[in-house]
Length: 166
Image (cartoon, rainbow, N blue to C red; front, side, top):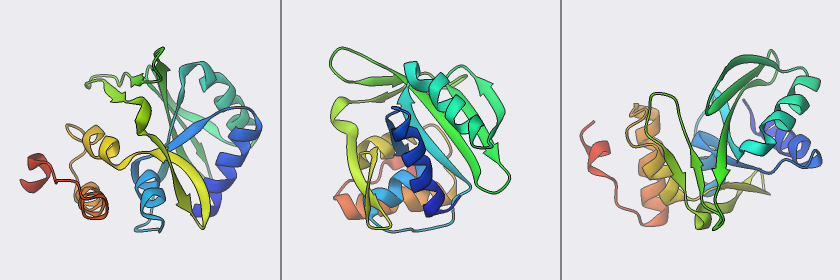
């Protein structure tokens, strides 16, 4: 998954009226304003009510459904890569909750939806502190630890103890 494809995907979904936010590695890179590593996929947060429309748009552009389960849909394209759609339910205050199968709920507070930058262009993403804590209890791999360290050093956050144990 490259930066041009990320921006094209944002454009496709926005044109269809689907609001999304970058999460995961591309969310980190958007917050940092630079590409820090290669990315295998693109993680997008969106409203559950927009999931079917997002899926339809991506299918029309050559993506195929690889996995689909409550709380997640994965679409792939031979040339463009993998997109993980993470639907959320928004409450009246603007907070969003994502339920991930066999894992704990991920909560995105309303002030956790911010803007970053990919290739000099504004890109909606999830805030640094929210990304940092959303990763806890999930994949504590070395690449995610590097993401966590970069977020902490750039945004004056403290690295959680779970990441220090690696």
